[in-house]
Length: 102
Image 1 (tube, rainbow, N blue to C red):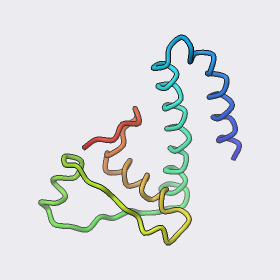
Image 2 (cartoon, rainbow, N blue to C red; image 1 turned 135 degrees about the vertical axis):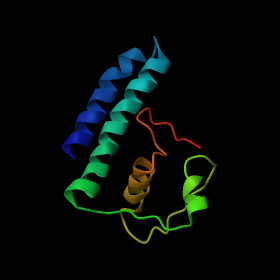
Image 3 (cartoon, rainbow, N blue to C red; image 1 turned 60 degrees about the vertical axis):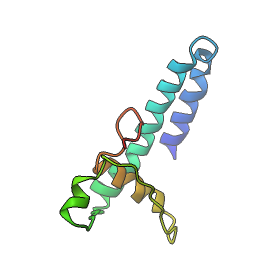
Image 4 (spheres, rainbow, N blue to C red; image 1 turned 30 degrees about the vertical axis):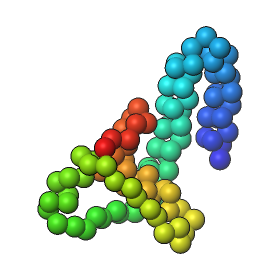
């Protein structure tokens, strides 16, 4: 919770950049957001020991990250979005710049 407060505060302080360069402001805020979401990935993988395994044939695995896809989660738990984000980072769908690859 503290890290979310810090990221939000820094984002608000960076609002002085908005009138001069919207692109720079958006890039900085996206980096802050990635650092915040990166904590969730770390907590789930390293601290909690969550292992994500994908099942499928070799042809499907070879196409991961190279084709467009839409993922829908069942939302049966409170942390489905964290697992979706972990899968995105683990299989290199989400990059450091916050862009999703297709």
